[in-house]
Picture: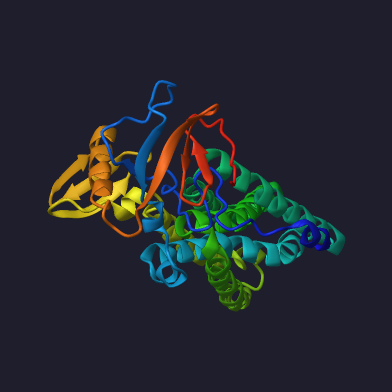
Length: 352
């Protein structure tokens, strides 16, 4: 960390990477509408200059707007459920190995080290996968679903004295615990902009602290009560603990399914009579209007979105930019001379 502090530098004012700056929320980096009837293509026969309106600033959020938004608190409680199991497993795995399976202190310590290794792998692998997919929400859904399955299997593994089954469940939980921790800053940046990550991440870590303190106290109280009720049956000592932890994990899983991670889900105006909307796993938007359910086609959703953007043209947040031809294709330039992106993805970021 000391070496990093020497080489890290603040980016220059107005710095963008392919249309993304510290204010940009995911989905807004490519939000713009044409101010003329000309089409943007990647061919070389377009006119040299095409004025467009950039609405990306309209979707940026202040810190208070971020913290007061309902999607932030949905992410908050989802994160609590995604981390509570790993926290408690890591803190109790040595006593489980010793009490349930009669392992020595050295063996139990080695198991804890292996669990720490899975935690590390999760922090490295899952954020990388989320970057490649360009999405964090599906991986949180997967994490919570897998952790719920493991929690459901742990009581049976303990009752059957299955050391391998217990370790497999614990290591899988440890992997997703680390992955959830590693992905949360990027998820917050996607939803609320990089400029708000420091504060939003700091606040969301209180969920982790609550899971550790309150979860640990409840876990210990339940364990002590069970050990007094079943003094001669060690397989029952952790049974009820793993069952109550399942409740917040399942709640967080259901919550994660409805987090509006897509910008359009949050900003697209509701249709007359619309009561609810949900983006299906295939990416299609489903609209519930009364007793009717309608899955929008990609063309229908795009048409509604473009109509919505066209209505923003007179807002003060809309800024004129230019799309010009270049040797790399077509790049968009703002008034501060920053090359925001190239249409064919081959351009570079230049600051003039």
